[in-house]
Amino acid sequence: MPAAARLGDPIGHSKAMTGFLAGAAVGFAATVGVAVVAGAVASAVAAEVVSGGLATPLVAGVLVTAGELAVNVVAGGYLASKAEEIGERAGSGMTSATGTIVEGSSNVSINGKPAAFVTRKVVCSKTGHQPGDMIAEGASTVFINGKPAARVGDRIVCGGVVISGSSNVFIGSPKKQVLKVNPEVPDRVRTAVFIASLLPAGGGLLRAVRPALQAVAEKGLTGSLKAGGKVLGEAMERRSLGPKGENFYKTKYLKEKYAEDLKETRTFKTNGVSEKDAVDYLGTDEGKAYIKKLQEADPTSKFNRIERRAIDQIRSGSSLPSSSQTSSSMIKIVPEGNSVSPHSPFFMTEEGLQEAQASGKTLSNHFGLPVISESDVYDIYRTTPNGEVTVYTSRVAPTSELGGLVTRDGGAGQTLILNRGEWSEPVKIGRITNKGVME
Image (cartoon, rainbow, N blue to C red; front, side, top):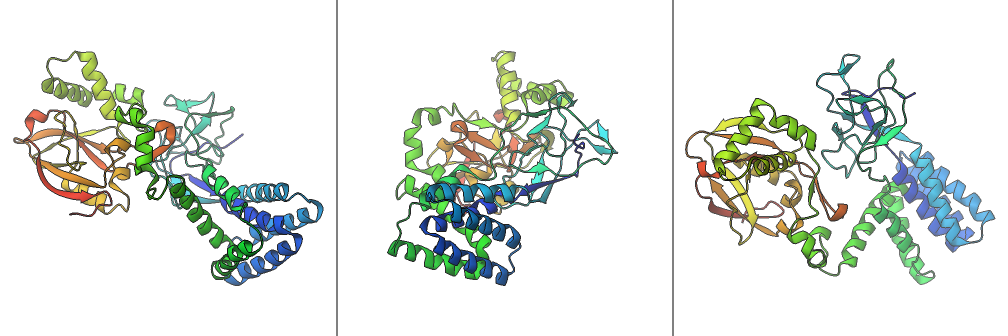
């Protein structure tokens, strides 16, 4: 029976990716011949040991196992797939801590710590990890605050798992997956490995292997495989979209192929506050004030429409909004040449724009924008309140579009201006690129 998870308990990732790539490299060499495998084994293991690679036991184990297969199996394709399978399986069994659970229940404790459950957030140091990831699995029959209780072994959206929990509180029940879990070996990497396995032999093989062996000698097998796999995957994405495929999510191809869906943002989803939590918030004093502010801005609309608008706005955040008074100006960015919609409530502080520039992400990613709103350059507008007014602040939630084909990290600070009549007409003050460079 798995231990209960709590605030502060560690999460971790396996070495499935490293194992898969190591197995893929060996399987590729094995398809050329046992002699090449033997040479690759000797060179790779020697290079890895010399470089002091931390994954030496994993890589060596995969190489040796694949070598044994090479003696007994003739079919190269089968051999390659088995090597990948062995590597991934070996790596999956090696888990190390990469982060912690950072959110728990506000009123349920385990061993004096807030209990963790599905949709609670984690932080993770793993390279490529998406900010704002949440616990995806929990107990199917045990609930905390209406959500499945999290236990050791339950997965995170990013593919990691809870690796440690309470020493004396255990929660049974089968697993229930509520949120999508990303595989630790992405499909694009598997596809890249398959394409790489089709490289021609002979002179082509020699040209391919020579720089690879040099990289192994410099970085160790594990390091070179990680770097190579990432570069190859990105190159395949670019090639699949032609010479303008510098960024998969901003290409003309994507906007043309899915024009209708993108135009109405019909597939755009915010993965933030739940519907229930948003509705519950509107029942609080702060939430009632939120509704009142929207009604003041649009007195002719029916309550149901106002309420729906409020829920959608609240769910754009990764947490419930907080109200405050301000007399400071606010900023908004729009695609170059566009005007500011008179109905949009989404703005940011000037400090928020500076934070976005320093985030290391594109503005479209940091602000979780729909594809249709992505631009190489944005116009910057400023609006000023007519005195001290109430605003609501939160952090932009991660977003997805086209059924998950496009995902955005979010994470930016956002300020919701609910009654634009309390503010001046926005004035254009400058331009900024999607990479955060002022023009």
